[in-house]
Structure formats: C-alpha cells, structure tokens
Length: 113
Length: 115
Image 1: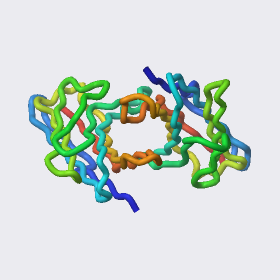
Image 2: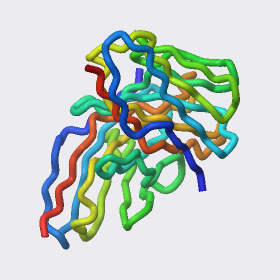
Image 3: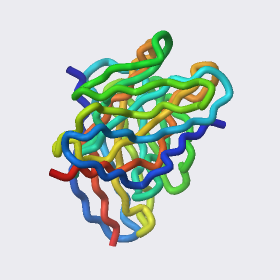
Image 4: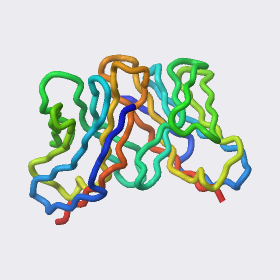
C-alpha cells in the first residue's frame, strides 16, 4: 500500500513567519507534487519535483519554494507567510510508469493569522 | 493548455437512486482521465482512471466512468447511491504527449446522498 504522510494535519502561523510543510512517501516514487486546495477552485499545482534536487514551478508558485534533498521527502516552504496562503495543502507522489496514478497525503490545513 | 470542467457544484440524490457526476475536459492530445474522492478532513483517494482501451472503466466502491471522446466527457456514475458516498469528487486530466507531469483538476462536485 502506498503511503504518503504529511508532517502536520493542522498548523496556525502568524503573518511573516517562515513555514515548513513536510511530505514523505514510502514507495520510491520519482515524482512528487504540492497542491493547494481552496473552495470552488479545486486543486492548484504549486510545485513539483521529478527527481532529487530537481523541481519545476506549477501554476501558482509565487510566495512558495520547495526542497527535495532525498527521494522520499519533498518540502514546501512559505518564506514569509501571508493571510492569503491560508489553505489546505496536499502532497502527492507518483511513479514515472504508465499507470500514472497520483497518491495523496492527508493534507495540512494551514491558518495564517 | 489542459483544463477540466465540473459544471455542478453540488449533486443531490436519494439513497438507492443512480447518480452521475459530470466532467468535461479540454486537451491537445490523448488524455489520461482520473476520478478522486475526498471525505471530510481527508486527502484525496483514487477511484478510477481511463488510460486506453475500453471506454467504460470500473473502479472502487461500485463507481464507474465512461470516456466519450466525441463529447470530451468522463462522467462518473453509480447504479445505486449510498449515504456513505456523500463526499467531494474531483475529476482530473493529464496529457501524456506533453511535458506536464502533474494532473490538472476540476473545481470539484459535492455529492449529497439523502437517506
């Protein structure tokens, strides 16, 4: 069974704080993704990584950065949190194979005050 | 560019009745299509996918979806709804021929099954 875990289910931070969201997968997947989910907007891609130390911007990368130092771990960083970054953050991973299924973690609900 | 539309924010159906959650897509190239379900305060769970082959795809929990290339649709269906099917459903697409490695999601449809 594929398992994607996220370091926190709920986080409360203050404006201007640096925030780290961690994601770990245990299936040796090459590809990892960070999405944010907002009501009425679905899931929007922030960043993804297709290999260690490799990353590409998604649709809404502004205000975020990522780090992938090890294959199993993909971190999302909010350099200076703002209230408009209050959201649900979802991590996913996928093999590079034909079956192409993305597996999601449980999500981190972030509130920025 | 690729996009997905889920035209209904919410679908209401009585328990035991058939349900349909609609999805249309717009891509250049051959699509891979997916359905995911999200229960409250949980991540997304994979339901089913269309890659190639038979246009009718069967998935988890009795759900199925039909790929219709001419109508660019991939509607999710179930013959008999359960109260426990109440959740948020997302359709997603990826085009194999492009460099985009991530799925593009629709805005989601909330399914409410009444007892």
